[in-house]
Amino acid sequence: MEKEENQNPNPNNEEQVEENKEINKTSESEDLKPEDKMKDLEDKLARAYAEIENQRRRFEKEKDDAFDYGGFSLARETLNLIDNLERSKLALENDENLKNSETLKKTLEHLNIIQKDMISILKKNNIEEIKSIDQKLDPNLHQAMMEVEDDNKEPGTVVQEIQKGFMMKDRLLRPSLVAVSKKTNKKEDNLKQDQKSEENQSKSNKN
Image (cartoon, rainbow, N blue to C red; front, side, top):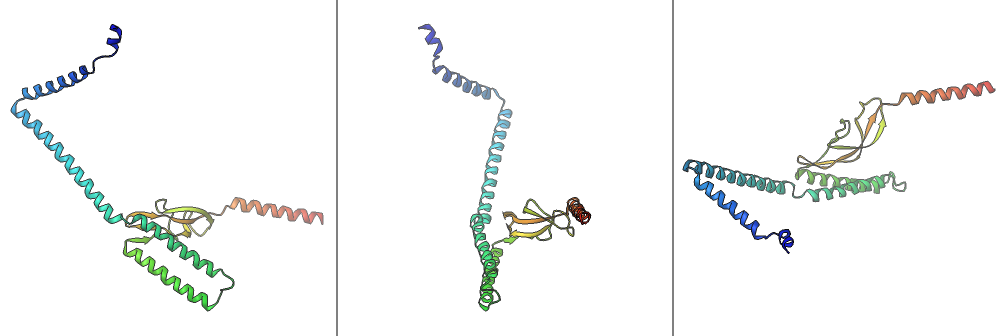
């Protein structure tokens, strides 16, 4: 029985320890000089004021972000409409039955007007296209999807825009999907030329 009592200490002892700590703190504060008490109170007041100020700043930032970027998700979804409009234009332009027809020209004119109006509305709401063509690849703005051999451009230059990217003020709404330039692999070209010359030489020897 004695062992069981020792294994299960009385929980009231823990409460007593906490009470003793509080009493000791109180007694220590009572022993402080008035000047020390004033300094202690000033420190506590300064910390409390700093915490309130930090909370106020966080609240102000959250409020500003909600005002400036509250439509972020809606704006991103709206970009799908512009993408679908662009795909529709391409599909019509590639339709053999409609090529060079007046119907196609009028339809494309109307679609272009709608597209310009949509982009204009986005601009009024601080949403702008990212400039990509002939720009150096920027991982913060562009997403490289493929490489294109081009000795006339510096490697890593955007030469094709697969999908337009957009910014909402200083935030990336959607990156541009692009193709970037790379130098021609001259070693492979030389190997191909050597292979061709060897094939031609073997053919001439056979003849």
